[in-house]
Image (cartoon, rainbow, N blue to C red; front, side, top):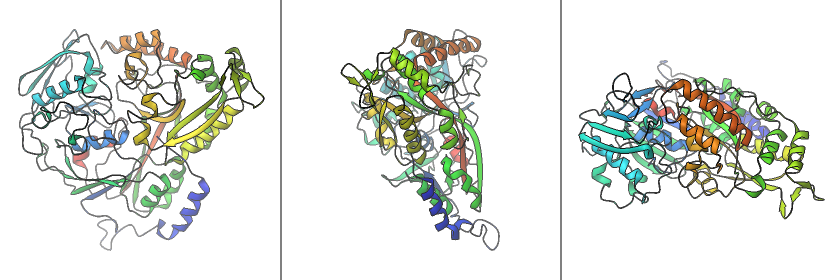
Length: 541
């Protein structure tokens, strides 16, 4: 989720800050950087959560922050492998946690875990959460995976017995964190509420994770302190400050002046300047964030697949990657992580404006005297949305706007904060948009039903392209209904071939994530999937 400003402004800012660009990196005794505040970790972030209850939170900030506040049954490590959290072990067919027919999952919960108020955390809390997710009075963002459960029970305080309607790989995913995975919530605090939609818990949660929320200064920061009752032991860090700095130039300035200790997901225009800053460590890795041009297929101008294919061919995506993103990212052909076992083999869309014009004409669109395509009473005027505060968003949008104008498509640009753009009542989830330029984050499993299957068109899920295609519906559902990896790989190949034909989105790139951090920060390991809080209890400074 990104946006833009001119490079010249950034260069002027860099000159203005030259005096502090190379400060002394160590104190006189050489023990630490002079600007380090021992025990205080300041995270520079470009957005804040839209909720602290994952049932209602849609953005990446929510995923990462809830990793600080809650314990989940499972987590992912930095490479996307399941690791146990509240569960004593990751359920598998081999250890008996998953039945041979794939229709039963048994999870054993750690004993002795408590909420921050001292109340026991047991299987009953997860069971309450399951019922809360399925409660129609709760307007949860998605029930994907949860709705595959036929029944769930807690035969004792430390055992969860899940029976599935049919084999479904998504159910294992909802036991982890991020996306449709919701942590156990405190039944003793919430069970009597008729609905959780407006519960105070959503902004002032009771913690079960490594940290407690000390303060949420909306628009500015969130402050966390150690949870003394955390089952792994209270973290050594005394305070984590999530500093909200929506403008990437300002955020880079704060990295330069050492007002933040960690800056994840550094703006592409700033990466070359990192060498000017002393006392930091820079790490980079390909991660599961995919940038794309989302297309609302329910809009009359965009309902014809030929129009959507024309859009894909009218834009020089390689040029955008080279000029806006400095060739740092990997061009995408699908929404399945390219290093996944399920990654399909597909050619990229070719840049061919002449063929784009042919497709538009074939779909019945004719150029008017205003230089814009028309079809009956319809004019080919559309709007592209993105999030504010990211220079590369605006630069990308301007290039897309110019290239589409060359084939007769008039594009207006409109940007909003991510907390609104991705909210349940925002443009994407209400369908009140034409095109959107944003980043999605994948979980380690390639299951993508929630993005493309018609069963998950809002408000039932996150299929914000409003795609409803029988082949995509059938292949995505079938792939999610078997644990047979070879069968799933074949199904994803067919599904992605069909998505490529229908063009509900143009898959642009996979991000190479650059994270800069104070060299005194220890054990902060950027993750390929979901969020960097996967091991937050180990962080030190």
